[in-house]
Image 1 (tube, rainbow, N blue to C red):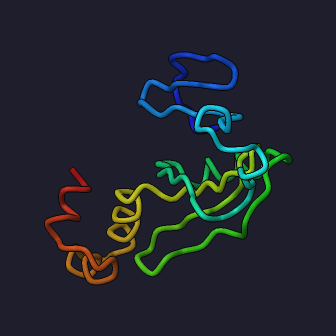
Image 2 (image 1 turned 45 degrees about the horizontal axis):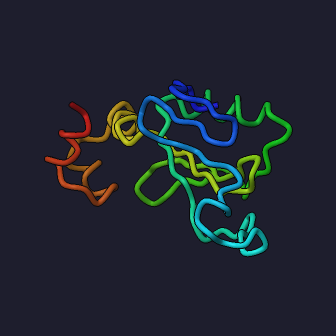
Amino acid sequence: MFGLEVCQNYGRNILFSCGLALQQNFDWLIGVPKEKVHKKSNNVEIVFEERDFDGFLQKLKGNSSIAFLGEVVEHDWGQRVIRFYDLDGHLIEVGEEMKMVIERFISNGMTLEEVSKRMDVSVDDLQKLLN
């Protein structure tokens, strides 16, 4: 779904080239009884940024096994995000890559100073994100 490259796949444990690892059925690893592991507890979310947010959203909505927490939300700083549960009940947030948000504002005629005010981020930080 995220286009990550798998380095190692041990079934219940998968390591990706970016360094992210996902572990299923981990109760035995951390010494916690299985009944203490709560699905859809909404107390942690894993967050990704996506360059092609609209394309990702189409792919996501084409997967009937995905349960959404809600609809797309646009935060005050302009970033659009969607939240959903993965197949194990973990809360995932995928948002527009911040560079794309800045570029969207600029293409709509905003100056860097206006973008800075809208996003509550310094012009220097915006320029770093753009480069």
